[in-house]
Image (cartoon, rainbow, N blue to C red; front, side, top):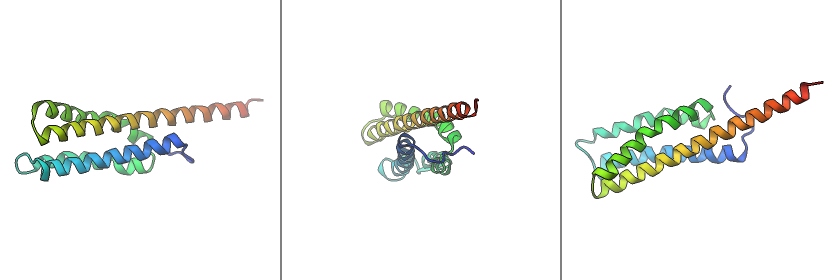
Length: 133
């Protein structure tokens, strides 16, 4: 399995941060496109659907989810960067917030993966040392 039996403090904190940032991006995307500064008929709200997919994996500490989400989040960072520089008013502020949340999510995923891989390597080295005569 891909989950950790007893996650350390870094893993717990980065998990919480990743979940919070993902949920915040979902809420922001829906609020932005449906109420705060809608574009067209609100059909751009479907952009948050891909963010629903990683939530179960984040909750279950699936390392693979953290890895692919750290790549997928750049789509939201790119949208935030483009819209923050090309739009005015509320939309520009919301785009800057989207960019900030995407960067927080990326950082949380990277630190989480690094901590998990280090813990796995340390555990494997300890097991090898105990097994050696």
